[in-house]
Length: 201
Image (cartoon, rainbow, N blue to C red):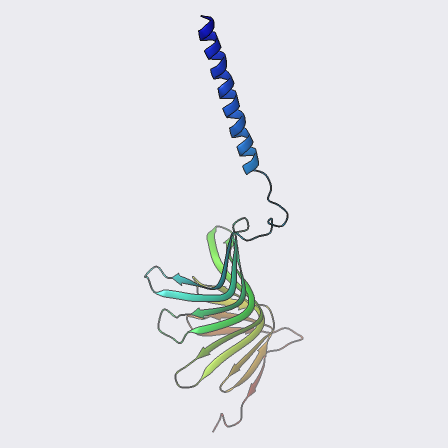
């Protein structure tokens, strides 16, 4: 009987030790990261390309960047020296957008599913070129692009150069699939257009 009691006591101590080890491991897994790693990305890619496809399998856009960093906690992807190539689902000439930096994140809307948005910042240039030599080039400090709707907008100053002239405005909304650019002005800053010579012959 004493031998049985001894085995029971030993078994109990073993269980307690095992539980203490698991508790210690769990506490260590919850320990905060070192200060030098706290702001480190969960994913880091250099000279990388991201492809996004539509539901029908066709390519929606191609995003290339010198550096791509993704942070799980914020669900945000940060870009350096980004180049965005937007393909039109109806076969129109693509848009190419260049920027020094940018972000990809989910944009929550009240009552609507979260929507992906690409924010491009610092020396943003958008270009669309046609086979006949005509073109549209938009320069602005920053712009938001919504891939699912092929929609772009900015409240920053914009300068639009084309093969026929130049236009300045203080904001833009672009339905890129339809080829529509809405320009905005204020009481202080009006939409201003300069037409190149020889356009009305």
